[in-house]
Image (cartoon, rainbow over all chains, first blue to last red; front, side, top):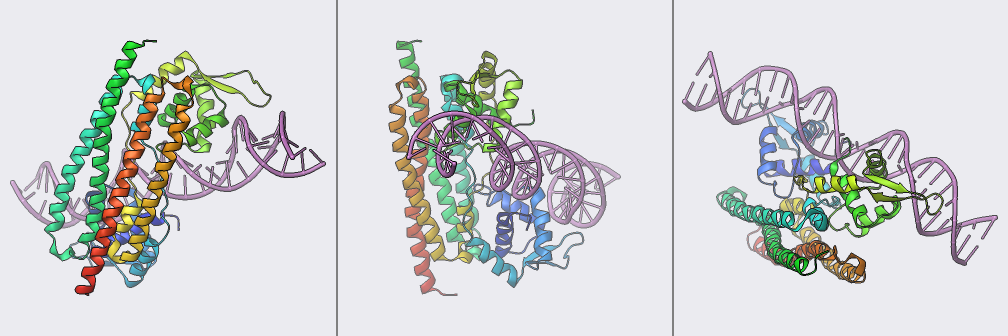
Length: 187
Length: 187
DNA sequence: GCCCGCATGTAACTGGTTACATGATTGT
DNA sequence: ACAATCATGTAACCAGTTACATGCGGGC
C-alpha cells in the first residue's frame, strides 16, 4: 500500500492497452501520457514488482532473454476499474511563471515580458506536438476503440495551449501599458 | 540550502508587499496566491527561521505579546530579485482527470461524463472567485503599484478556466457521439 | 470561566526524483 | 570490437504534507 495508487493506475492502464516490458512502459508513459502525466523512472519497476506480487499483472515468459513482457490479469483489470473510479486527488498548484509575474514590480517589466514570450513559444511548440500525436494515433487502427478517448486528452492540451497564447498576448500588451504609465508617473 | 528556493521566493515576495506575521503570511499565500501557488503550513515557519538566520528578514519587536512581525531587509530584497530571475523549474504534470479520461474505454462513458461535468463546474466556480479577487484588489489603493501585475495572474486564471469550460462542452458532445457509435457497432 | 481564533513551532511520514550499477542484444 | 540502445533494478536523498503540541488574548 506504500505506493500511491496513482502510479498503479497509470501502469495498469497502460498495460490494459497492450502488454509490454517495463522499459516500453516507461517510454509509453513519457511519450503518450507525457503532456498530462509524469511517472518517474524509479517508480515504475517497484510498482510492477508490487503489482505482480498482488497478482494484478503477470510477466510473460521472456521472449528474448533478459526481457519480460508484463500483461494485465483479470484481477488486474478489476483493480484498474476500481482505481479509475476513485476520487481525483488534486495536486497543489505551483506555477512558477505566475509567481514571478505576481512579483513583477520587483522583477521588472522587461523580465516579465521575456518570461511571457517564452511561455507563449512553449505553448506554440506543444500545439505542434499535438499534431504529431494526432497523426500517430490515426496510424494505429488496432486502437480504434481507445482513440476517441485519447482525442479528448489531446483536445484538452490544445485548449490549454490556446489559452496560454491568448493570455500571453494580452499580458504583453498590459506590460507595455504598465511601462508607459511608469514613464508618465515615475516614483 | 535544504529548503527549495521556491518557498523562499514566495515568502520573501509576500513580505516585499508588506511586513506581516508568519500566520498572516500563511493566509496571504493561501488566499491571494492560492490559485497558482501552494505553500504548505509546515514549510513557512522553518523557511522564515532560515531566512532570519541569513539576515534576509528581520522580526520586528512584538507589537502584541506572543506575535512578531517579519519584514524584508535590504539584503532580503536583493535575495528576492536574485531568486525571481532564476529559471522556472517545471513541476511534473499530473492531471488525474485526463489520466482517467485517457482510459475512458475501461472507465466507461457515463463516468467520463460525470468527471467532465464536475471539472466544468469547478472552472465556473473559479471564475466567480476571480471576480471577488478583482474587487478585493480594487479596494486597496495602497497596492496600486503591484495591482497591474496581480491582474496578469488573475487574467491567466480566467483564461485557463474559460479553456476548461470550452473543452468540457466539446468533450461532452464527443462522449455522446462515442456512446451512439457504440450502440450502432457493439463489441 | 470557556471557547475560538491568532500565533509558533516540531516530528514523523511519504511520495517522488536522481544517480548509480549492471548486463544483454543489435547493428556497424 | 565497439557503441548504442534495450532492459532491470536499487539506494540515497529531498521536498512536502500531515498531524501533533503548545500557549496567548479577546469576546461571550
